[in-house]
Image 1: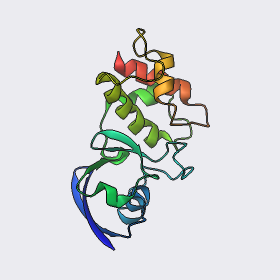
Image 2: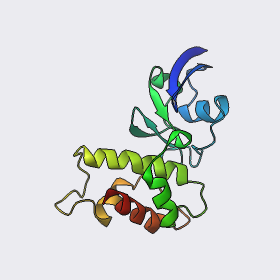
Image 3: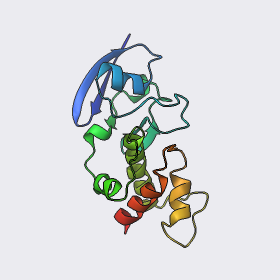
Length: 157
Protein backbone atom coordinates (compact mmCIF):
# COMPACT_ATOMS: atom_id res chain seq x y z
CA UNK A 1 0.00 0.00 0.00
CA UNK A 2 1.07 3.55 -0.74
CA UNK A 3 -0.32 6.57 1.05
CA UNK A 4 -1.28 9.43 -1.23
CA UNK A 5 -2.84 12.81 -0.57
CA UNK A 6 -4.87 14.65 -3.16
CA UNK A 7 -7.10 17.67 -3.07
CA UNK A 8 -10.36 16.34 -4.50
CA UNK A 9 -13.14 18.83 -5.19
CA UNK A 10 -11.61 21.21 -2.65
CA UNK A 11 -11.05 18.72 0.17
CA UNK A 12 -7.70 17.15 1.02
CA UNK A 13 -8.05 13.38 0.95
CA UNK A 14 -5.57 10.82 2.25
CA UNK A 15 -5.79 7.35 0.73
CA UNK A 16 -3.91 4.09 1.05
CA UNK A 17 -3.85 2.52 -2.41
CA UNK A 18 -2.05 -0.27 -4.15
CA UNK A 19 0.32 1.07 -6.85
CA UNK A 20 -1.84 -0.43 -9.62
CA UNK A 21 -5.12 1.25 -8.60
CA UNK A 22 -6.43 3.62 -11.24
CA UNK A 23 -7.40 7.15 -10.36
CA UNK A 24 -10.92 6.30 -11.50
CA UNK A 25 -11.18 3.36 -9.10
CA UNK A 26 -9.74 5.44 -6.25
CA UNK A 27 -12.29 8.19 -6.86
CA UNK A 28 -15.25 5.84 -7.23
CA UNK A 29 -14.46 2.99 -4.86
CA UNK A 30 -12.39 4.70 -2.16
CA UNK A 31 -13.97 8.18 -2.11
CA UNK A 32 -17.51 7.28 -3.24
CA UNK A 33 -17.58 9.77 -6.12
CA UNK A 34 -19.91 8.37 -8.77
CA UNK A 35 -19.68 11.21 -11.32
CA UNK A 36 -16.72 9.82 -13.26
CA UNK A 37 -17.96 6.66 -14.97
CA UNK A 38 -16.24 3.47 -16.00
CA UNK A 39 -17.18 3.11 -19.64
CA UNK A 40 -14.66 1.39 -21.87
CA UNK A 41 -11.83 1.30 -19.27
CA UNK A 42 -9.44 1.88 -22.20
CA UNK A 43 -9.41 5.68 -22.51
CA UNK A 44 -11.54 5.73 -25.66
CA UNK A 45 -14.97 6.89 -24.48
CA UNK A 46 -14.14 9.72 -22.05
CA UNK A 47 -16.84 8.84 -19.52
CA UNK A 48 -14.13 8.92 -16.82
CA UNK A 49 -12.78 12.39 -17.71
CA UNK A 50 -11.79 14.54 -14.73
CA UNK A 51 -9.65 17.65 -14.33
CA UNK A 52 -6.17 17.23 -12.84
CA UNK A 53 -4.78 20.64 -11.91
CA UNK A 54 -7.28 22.03 -14.43
CA UNK A 55 -6.21 19.74 -17.29
CA UNK A 56 -8.59 17.09 -18.59
CA UNK A 57 -7.45 13.48 -18.25
CA UNK A 58 -8.93 10.01 -18.58
CA UNK A 59 -8.99 8.77 -15.00
CA UNK A 60 -9.20 5.13 -16.11
CA UNK A 61 -5.72 5.42 -17.67
CA UNK A 62 -4.09 7.23 -14.74
CA UNK A 63 -2.67 5.54 -11.69
CA UNK A 64 -3.81 7.12 -8.43
CA UNK A 65 -0.22 7.24 -7.15
CA UNK A 66 0.71 9.53 -10.06
CA UNK A 67 -1.61 12.18 -8.66
CA UNK A 68 -0.22 12.35 -5.14
CA UNK A 69 -0.14 16.03 -4.16
CA UNK A 70 -2.29 17.11 -7.10
CA UNK A 71 -5.72 18.71 -7.34
CA UNK A 72 -8.48 16.62 -8.90
CA UNK A 73 -11.87 18.00 -9.88
CA UNK A 74 -14.72 15.65 -10.74
CA UNK A 75 -18.17 16.70 -11.87
CA UNK A 76 -19.18 16.80 -8.20
CA UNK A 77 -16.81 19.74 -7.73
CA UNK A 78 -17.69 21.63 -10.93
CA UNK A 79 -19.68 24.85 -11.07
CA UNK A 80 -19.60 26.14 -14.64
CA UNK A 81 -22.03 27.82 -17.07
CA UNK A 82 -21.65 24.79 -19.36
CA UNK A 83 -23.79 22.73 -17.00
CA UNK A 84 -26.87 24.85 -17.67
CA UNK A 85 -25.97 25.19 -21.36
CA UNK A 86 -25.88 21.38 -21.67
CA UNK A 87 -29.43 21.26 -20.29
CA UNK A 88 -30.71 24.06 -22.55
CA UNK A 89 -29.16 22.48 -25.64
CA UNK A 90 -30.12 18.88 -24.84
CA UNK A 91 -26.48 17.87 -24.52
CA UNK A 92 -27.05 15.18 -21.92
CA UNK A 93 -29.43 12.60 -23.37
CA UNK A 94 -29.05 9.39 -21.31
CA UNK A 95 -26.66 11.13 -18.91
CA UNK A 96 -24.11 8.35 -18.46
CA UNK A 97 -21.27 10.17 -20.20
CA UNK A 98 -22.42 13.70 -19.32
CA UNK A 99 -20.07 14.16 -16.32
CA UNK A 100 -17.05 13.26 -18.47
CA UNK A 101 -18.33 15.39 -21.34
CA UNK A 102 -18.68 18.40 -19.07
CA UNK A 103 -15.22 18.00 -17.53
CA UNK A 104 -13.74 17.51 -20.98
CA UNK A 105 -15.53 20.57 -22.38
CA UNK A 106 -14.31 22.73 -19.49
CA UNK A 107 -10.75 21.52 -20.03
CA UNK A 108 -11.10 21.96 -23.80
CA UNK A 109 -12.23 25.58 -23.43
CA UNK A 110 -9.24 26.29 -21.19
CA UNK A 111 -6.90 24.72 -23.78
CA UNK A 112 -8.47 26.78 -26.57
CA UNK A 113 -8.29 30.01 -24.56
CA UNK A 114 -4.61 29.28 -23.80
CA UNK A 115 -3.94 29.10 -27.55
CA UNK A 116 -3.28 25.38 -27.75
CA UNK A 117 -3.87 24.29 -31.37
CA UNK A 118 -5.78 21.25 -32.56
CA UNK A 119 -5.50 19.27 -35.79
CA UNK A 120 -8.03 21.62 -37.44
CA UNK A 121 -7.17 24.95 -35.83
CA UNK A 122 -7.60 27.72 -38.37
CA UNK A 123 -8.85 31.24 -38.51
CA UNK A 124 -12.50 30.35 -37.97
CA UNK A 125 -12.40 30.43 -34.18
CA UNK A 126 -14.23 27.86 -32.11
CA UNK A 127 -16.48 26.56 -34.89
CA UNK A 128 -18.17 23.14 -35.19
CA UNK A 129 -15.10 21.48 -36.72
CA UNK A 130 -12.80 22.83 -34.01
CA UNK A 131 -15.13 21.71 -31.20
CA UNK A 132 -15.67 18.28 -32.71
CA UNK A 133 -11.92 17.73 -33.11
CA UNK A 134 -11.14 18.88 -29.58
CA UNK A 135 -13.96 16.79 -28.10
CA UNK A 136 -13.22 13.69 -30.21
CA UNK A 137 -11.92 11.76 -27.19
CA UNK A 138 -15.40 11.82 -25.66
CA UNK A 139 -17.77 9.57 -27.54
CA UNK A 140 -21.49 9.86 -26.98
CA UNK A 141 -23.43 6.92 -28.30
CA UNK A 142 -26.86 8.30 -27.49
CA UNK A 143 -26.92 11.27 -29.86
CA UNK A 144 -26.11 14.17 -27.57
CA UNK A 145 -23.16 15.36 -29.65
CA UNK A 146 -24.96 18.18 -31.50
CA UNK A 147 -26.35 19.49 -28.23
CA UNK A 148 -22.89 19.40 -26.69
CA UNK A 149 -21.39 21.35 -29.59
CA UNK A 150 -24.23 23.90 -29.35
CA UNK A 151 -23.72 24.25 -25.59
CA UNK A 152 -20.00 24.86 -25.98
CA UNK A 153 -20.63 27.44 -28.71
CA UNK A 154 -23.21 29.18 -26.50
CA UNK A 155 -20.84 29.48 -23.56
CA UNK A 156 -17.76 30.40 -25.58
CA UNK A 157 -19.59 33.26 -27.27
